[in-house]
Length: 141
Image (cartoon, rainbow, N blue to C red; front, side, top):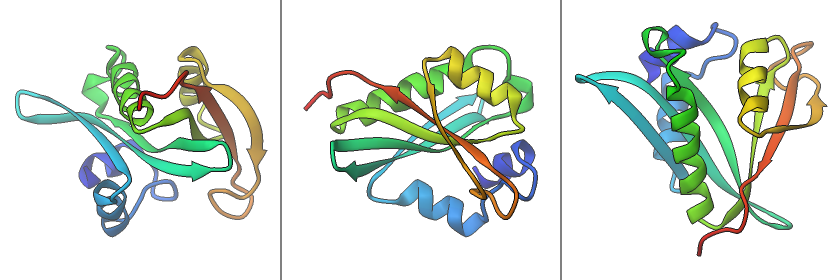
C-alpha cells in the first residue's frame, strides 16, 4: 500500500511507511483493497471515530493506481468502505481534500459529498484542505 501511495501522491501529501501501516492496522480501521491479477489496483482506508452525535467515518486515504483510473474503481472502493463504516454504526463520512486537487473534489462531489468548510493549514503552513461530508443514512447495528 505504501508503494502505491508514493505513486499516487506528491511527497508533501503522502504518508510515511510507518504511518500507513499504523492507519491500516488500527483497531478502528476499515480497509478495502482491490487487486487485479495479483496487482494492487487500489485501496481505501477509513477510520471509525466517535463524535457528539454518534460514530463518524473518516477517509484517511483513497489510492488508485494510474492504470486502473477512470474505470469506476475509486467509486466502488468508496461504496464498499462507506458500507463498512455504516455497518460499524456511523451515519456519516468525512474527509479532507487538498484545495488544489480539482479531480478529487469533482469525484467526491459527484459521489454525494458536500462541502463543509475550509481547513487552513491542514497539510502544513499555507496548504489548505476542504472538508467534505456525506450522510450515510441509518446506521446498521
